[in-house]
Image 1 (cartoon, helix red, strand yellow):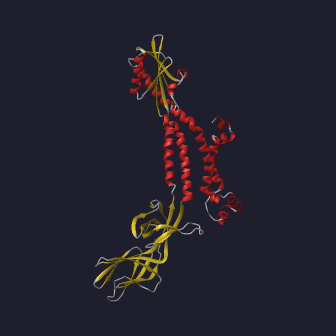
Image 2 (image 1 turned 45 degrees about the vertical axis):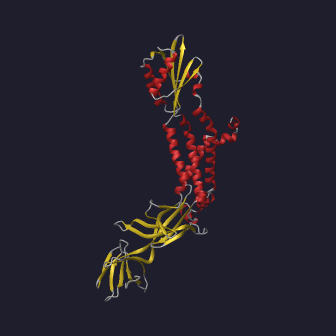
Image 3 (image 1 turned 180 degrees about the vertical axis):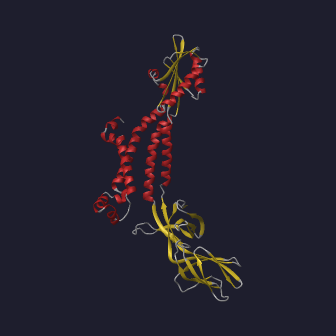
Length: 453
């Protein structure tokens, strides 16, 4: 290890300055990547920043910054820095966490900043037993060993907290590994599914990639669009059904930020699109309570027939949209009894169609296609594990400490003396309060006859 530490390459990769350089450079690059649009066309960059700046951006691959050679190189350099720092520091930290503290030199104990010396009225062996009791009552379970000149007792808490920094280093590396697994074995794709239709493939953003088979079918059973009073879209919701081998295995109504997950894939509600000239009609027979959904087209000369029923209808005219972005539809309806009905109705509204001997309820809405973003990220649980480890490691680093207390009981010229001292690698003020409380226990016990500090 000494040879490694004297090696200039080893020194470079274990340098804190290198870590800070990587962190600040990556942070700055991430800000740039957030401000500057990613994966836009060259003409868009020319329009926004001018031809000279656009060419400079292209040279540094800023339009695709997170996949650029220099950004990935910075990440690799930072990962190497963390790995080598961890290898370099672990042996020392492990030694501190597991070292034999009963082998501590007495001269070192006598020079500690937090120390008190008491004179006991008991013999040495009785005093050792009393010291154990006092420290146990204060929550410090001791081990002891006979050493030159007396008996040394020791207790510690949080020795494992020395490894908190190692946990944080490993957590960052785990996040990197998870991101790489997601990049090389996962994908992001999208698909538009018309309401009432289904698909078993999704598509990447680049046309050179073939469609990706899902291994199951996703159906958009229903699409709902609600509006604010101003007419602006408020919420779009898709009722999705997952079918595998002809059976429904999962269904969920999704909105933005509330996706559906199945078979390692996540389906996000991303967008929607009205299908020009197509409408969804829901027709209910009030007498029999039978209900059927239909897809209507306009303009068309063909009426839609209700299978097995003597009912046909269609849209013969469309008006709108109005200020609220809603349409009106002129409907032609026949059930073979009397003259056909012709009437106007509002989008989203329900109309009762009165016919001889029966009534029908009709609702008509535009037909939409739901836009889904599909993500497969097998590394996400590795990333989550890394994030949890990082939080735990940071809690250990900032809020926990390795606290050690020694008590040396010795016989000096027929008098029993007790040296009580302690150390903490962090939270010195808090540990000082702990030691003062322990000193008070000693000073007020029947064991002590004099405080010699």
